[in-house]
Image 1 (tube, helix red, strand yellow):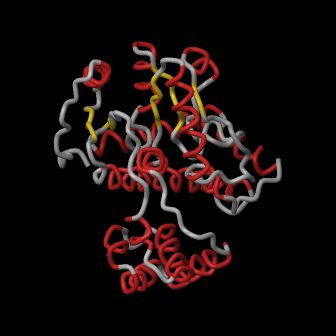
Image 2 (image 1 turned 120 degrees about the vertical axis):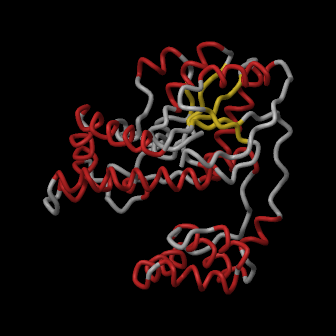
Amino acid sequence: MGPTASGKSSLALSLAKQFPLEIVNADSVQLYRGLEIGSAKPTAQERQQVPHHLLDVTTPDQPYSADRYREAAWAVVCDCQQRGRIPLFVGGSGLYFRAVEQGLVVIPPMDPAIRQAFRAEGERLGWPVLHERLRQVDPVLAARLSLEDGQRITQGLAVQAVTGRPLSQWQQEQPPPPAFAILKMARLWPRALLYARIEARFEAMLAQGLLAEAGQLLVAGYDPALPAMKAVGYRQLFPHLTGQIALAEAVEWAKRESRRYAKRQMTWLRKEADLHWLPPEGEREAVALVEGLLEGRRTAPPDPPTLFF
């Protein structure tokens, strides 16, 4: 685990070459075909070196839910277990990790128009207004969310409106975690260094052809409003490609949103239980932790760090 540009993929590739591991994608953008450069998807050469799973499983116009991901991920887990291999989940989508580890809340289906109505209201009035409304009907959930977490504020209000019960109550009824030994590691960088890595990586993506890749998605007819097309990097380049903003403005916007995304990821990770934090050059520590897992030795993780972010 870890924030964007923290080097998760390179560390995972190194570990998979040393242990009987197979890499399982846990990045929501890498699920989509056509979003290659901007999602930092493993290259064809890297996939030849180590087995990879759950990459390129759908197209941008076919959204992939966390529930669908959990089902597919557990199929991979069972397949690896039968072959004597160990799945190594790698990515920055915290909800996907949690879906596999803890399961998902089962709630009655609801009309998407209800969610859309709350989302439109939040965009019109501002998310702090809807956060306050959520606090009145589901204070437990509201206390866990930032004032600008539009997606989860929308979900909380929609569930309350449809079911008459707070989402936090539904969450308390989720199934117990699976009976597997799980080792969780996160790469951690000092904020200034991570931000520098984020900016350097986006420049490298542009040099690799990210702008052309984004243009190909538009030419293919994919609506920029699709969830997949709202991924950081792509969403900021589309207005430039349609003549609305200059490239320099789009690039700066993308870098800024990437930094904000990293900050949100760190906020999520600090709430993860039993998480081992790895220093920037932490391969040695990661190897020792994996060896301990394979040998049945478990090391208690330290408290979340405060120095770095």
